[in-house]
Structure formats: C-alpha cells, structure tokens
Length: 138
Image (cartoon, rainbow, N blue to C red; front, side):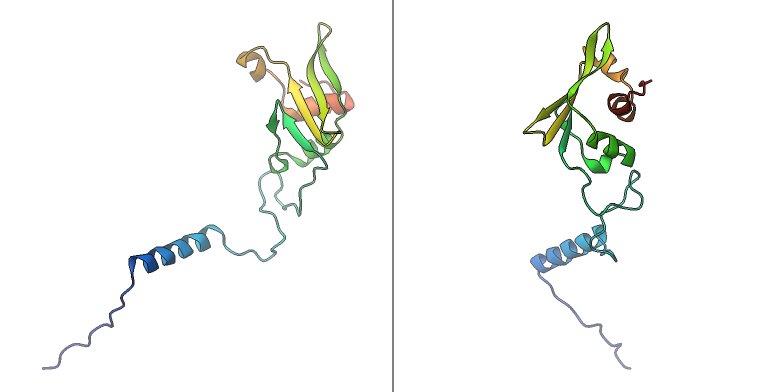
C-alpha cells in the first residue's frame, strides 16, 4: 500500500508573517493608479484636480478650509474675497473677511452669539456669493 504524497511544509517567523500582512494591507488600501499625477476624486471634484487651485490659504473662523472640501464654485468665490465687513444687520456687520500674513491668508469670520445663531447661517456658498457679488444670502 502506497503512502499518500505529503504537502511541502513552509515555515515563516512571526516577523515575516507580520511583514507580509502589512504589505498586503497597504496594497489593498492604495491600489496603483494609471495616472500617478491624478488626485483622488471626490463628490466635489468627480473628474479629479491635478493640484491645489488656491493661491492663498483660507480659514473659516480660524479653521482651515481645504480645497478638496469645496465645490469648484466655492473655490472660485474664495479666490475673489476681499477684506472687509459684510452682511449688515441693524447696521452691524455679521461677517468679516480679514487678510493676514500680507494677504496670503484669508480668515472668514462670522459673529455668532450662540450655537443656534451659528446654525441659522446660510451655506458657505451663499455667504461667499453675497460677499463677492452682492447676491443676498438666503
């Protein structure tokens, strides 16, 4: 009676196993792209964008605004912002555009007295339209 053939045995160390698993995880998270210059697309830029379109840095109440999180229209409006006070209510400006660092940084500030007031602000796009071209924000 013949003995069945035995499968070859492979031995690896725990370190080798960890390295192989890490390599497989990296490969599954970041598959290679056909165009290495292509920036990952998102809902605002479905066709992708080759590079950051901002010529300045922007903040909204001190928080950085990232171009990937802006629609193309918002990017265009942000680029047109000029320092000043906007959206007067009872003669008091509610929105301030402040240039810092010799104009290389623009901070868009809103006077919000509380969370409810902040939540009643119009969208960023509507605010930018009113600031840039005077279209009333709704």
